[in-house]
Length: 279
Image (cartoon, rainbow, N blue to C red; front, side, top):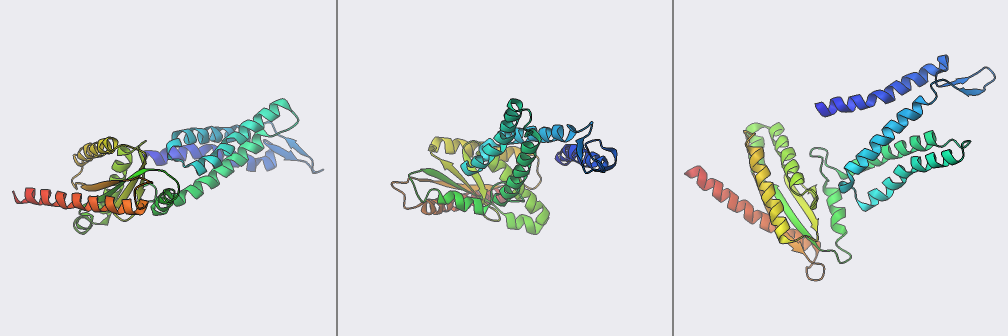
């Protein structure tokens, strides 16, 4: 709710700019075209530039804030987008007759909007983490080269039962919070993906088993804290395996090992909670 209000607030300048520019046809506030078809600037000509710079600053803040989540190919696109207005500003300072600030800022914002639209295809709409398509592309990186990795497969226990008893809305909420817990637990350590309805995978590059165990321990702590505030408890089963480029059969074989380990953990959890239910 608060996020939607904040986003609506951020949209005010662009609507205001569109309104003023539309009125300029009659008032000449931003521009004026006279009967001789001559174009002149209005008293508020700098307003669109200022608003564009405002959104450009938000763009830079967003890029810095989400830097960890961007892939190298994403960064190759973002760097020119960010540098374009800065370069335009420098050129205009050096050559006053060359007007580039407004144009480069507007183009930069347009390209960033296109970039965000393309980025959406990499993310799962329901959870906000990367989707199956992004997962497959990440796995392909390990089919060639000498990179090592750790694969962690995580599954939500009893989701079907939750859907049957509490409805799909509660089930969807369970998936959302599970993704949030996984993302928080492995932040800065690995990349989290939703690869199925109730199945997730985290791919970590070049990390030790101690660090994996620490992340999973953190996951359990966050899970306990989250469940204290929920009537419908979330239970996560997980397993992991290490991929070594020189020794392992393939990254997909490592995934299968992690998946098998996850099902072993799932069986233990069901047995444990089953015994507790019988007590």
